[in-house]
Length: 89
Length: 387
Image 1 (cartoon, rainbow over the protein chains, first blue to last red):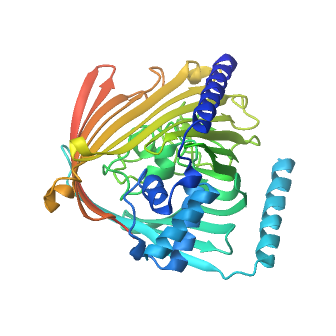
Image 2 (image 1 turned 90 degrees about the vertical axis):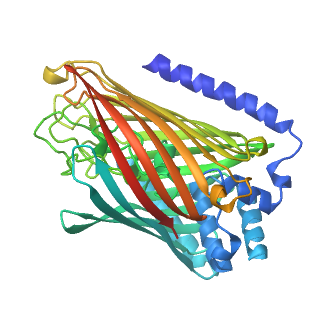
């Protein structure tokens, strides 16, 4: 059992390291993406996206905070998405 | 145990002090989902069923959120209300968000993200995720503490969650229903169902209040969003599952989960492709005692493919979605609840808007017994709405 856990942890670390190296080499970082793109990418990964008009600005603040914690959005992603939703509302 | 209590007190008092200092207004949102099912099984009378799951969200400021989902269902002419989850979240910084309370199990991406009826693309749940389907290998919810977040890494992202919780309990007495929630019929709602397995020994009960021992389970998940359309993850949970002061008290379990989700608009296919899969394997120590003296290892997995022809000019066809899922569960032969099962479900959905869907699904499940196998077919009609 311990050997199995060690192997799994080792593989996870190797994969994480490769991803970090590959990710750092990429041109378009999440920080450079517009809010509309982040909205489609992150929300659409699990469900159909809600139109900006479906909630008020105040409600979007709460909804995006909820999804930031549920979907592990980064701080930048959440900020850009909520700015986009309010602007498009 | 003392350390856990101190940690809980510290986190709660810290959250409270932050909220008292906050100057921004409190905001709230009532959201959630509801559904109605018509289920037609080959040997049983057709049944209508309903579910209503309101979700309450309150944010004290930009860093503190309380979230709770209640589940209302009608069972035996009574309305049953369950707290699906209720937790306080505190965003400490860009890379750490703390949560305390009852929360959807982070090591299990289906239960955490895909289970709501308007998100789950089929009206049933994959095998192994619900006590109502006969055997449950993964918890749908946890009661405890968690820390989680997403960390950007170039154009990709790493997401993580770690939690400490009450954990599951080993069922050792066939007359025992540890938490007073026996198993029942297949749960076709796409809801999180937790409970014991009345009349079976060897499996785990994931209804973790009250805890049967003083040890806490530790679990989590790390996910890699390699590019926006693809996420792969590995989840785990390790726990002592034996009841304190019994001959089974040292029995432990280890749960592994691997998941994959891939969602992509493919213009050459004139639509959106959605692939989801999750593989679970559960190892429970062999206590070497009586009726539990066997290798208690189980696996369950599913693979699901959906296609929606977004880019076809017909508005009717654009709203159609075709789904197929294969799922399977393999249990120890020596266990009393030892029915291996495999199932194929095909479905057609029609989206009335972005969060309201009508689903038609046909499932055929094969159960393997010592004296052969048997198949059963189910037809499910569901209308589900997220709001």
